[in-house]
Amino acid sequence: MDLKLTEEERLIKDTAAQFVDRELIAREGDYLRQPQAFLPPGDPARRDLQPKTRDELIQRAREVGLWALELPEPMGGPALGALARALIHREFGRSVLPFRPLSVPEFMFESEYGQRLADGTLSLSLAFDEAHKTGELSRLQTLYRQEPDGSILRDSSITVANAKADLFLFPAREQGTERLGLFAIERDSPGLTIADEVDLTTDATVARLTMRQCKIPNEQLVGYEYEAGALIAAEQLNMAARCLGIAMRCLAASIEHARNRVTFGRRLAERQAIQWMLADLSVALRTSTWLTLGTAWRADQGLPYFEEAALAKKRAAQMAFQAADTAIQIHGGYGVCKEFPFEAFYRETRHMRLLFGREEELDRARGEKFMREGNP
Image (cartoon, rainbow, N blue to C red; front, side, top):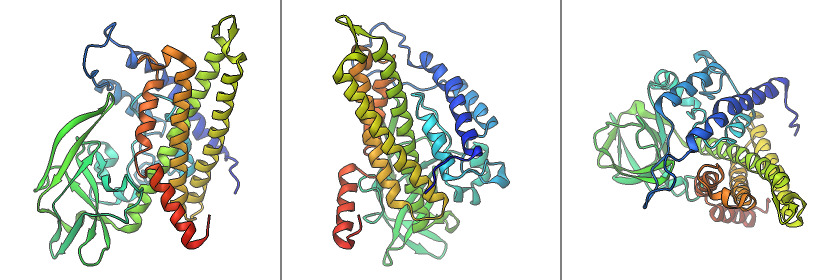
């Protein structure tokens, strides 16, 4: 395996880094600044980008080819490989702003929704709630029944993150055959209701998506087992790459603070305990980087990478959580202040540890395969 970046990949990485520094990190002060001196009692208000700011960032990201990364070249896309996309997501992970490249699977651009997804007039959300525990769809409970004029989904209720999306990708198994189908379900489909939207964190919401005798036309069956599995692996890889960026930001900020902060007559960087914390984090970041970029390289080479993506996501999310925790400890009281990014990174990484495969479930699946096949 040769992970030496090509000239094009280095240019992509540098372009993404410059965009993040100039457009995202430069805006963090306004985004994180609290209007009140003290937060009011109860839950704090949910933070989000102003619509005007988001539209401006989308336009600038489009101009430099950092928006719809999976968009096919015939539709004006950048035609990027998995490694290039991972490098971009890693750079975007360095900013706490809730802004990242549009994530739409490539096969969706071949559907009837493709042009509207490419134009940004249609938004997409993944209704993969049943995959978050194990990171796979082998234990999927939702069933559908094939009819001549469409498919009828069995009554079910799941949690979705982006409840305001226009379109939901929903996996289900065919009754009797266990074949998996991946459906594109429109928000206004008969039998589909979205309710009980609540704040998950100060930056995100979740809602309950319920289906009652929901009938989906045949043309909205957009994929099967491979597409659903590839979609999970792609999300795992994107998360792993974003976690690398979070850890890079936390490590760099912690080193800078330790070099400048003086307590009891000595800089923090001179204290052995601080040195050990930063050294351990540096090693963990490097190993997670190799796992993540190695997985992306396998994807570009057409090699199997599903298990590697799950392992990279698990390790990187755990490492980024450690990085945020380390940054909070080294920054002291500033670490938990909402005008610094570390408490937001802490919440985000804790959440990502629960998405598309919880750590203990991934470990258990890996152990079961080793006992069955003897292949580590």
